[in-house]
Length: 281
Image (cartoon, rainbow, N blue to C red; front, side, top):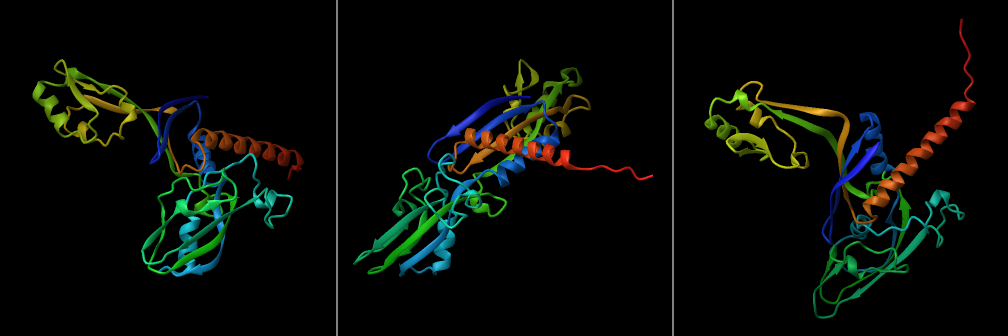
């Protein structure tokens, strides 16, 4: 197996990584994708206790919005509730308290995620600019919220990624001997929606690192002579695109997914050893 990072964008608005995964079957690649989506834990608000809410939104709507605010996650110091020594009742090892206290006078205010004050600096909203509710004059929004670890299998709010997907690594061959004139090449480039093909020294060519671009749609091949462009895919080689929510670094998400996968293999091996196989004649 070989892993190569080909792109990593990380700033206050985006956390995205593209990696090439080589030497695995499509079944294993898909299992890895599903583990990232459904079983890598992240922190999210699970309970809200309102003291005052004079906003235009009902308590349930505000609570729903709070639950969908991505929170930075510390997997080393917090346990999943069902694995905690408190039995999931809520303690400092599996739960974090966040508070909000906004009181307006003769002004209108917007409550943002940055107004949430966490009892643990390691657990906080990944962005301070997510709108919670609009507050009118002489109104209040006071509540206590509690966040816990969870997995996407239970609720989408616990997913540490916005999206994760993969595609086959493309293998494109161009036979310029099939073209009778440069006008035919120009026609191909004109109808290429992907913008992956270019004309170089009077011949059709691909841009550098074309596999980092969009998928081939067949728009160019349609206007090329038969056999001029052949698009195939490399077996057991995939391009993974992972867009994180900011709750966990993508590298940590990948490491945790591998750890969970290996635990599943160990569990399967243990269960297999206990199976008694009888032969039916």
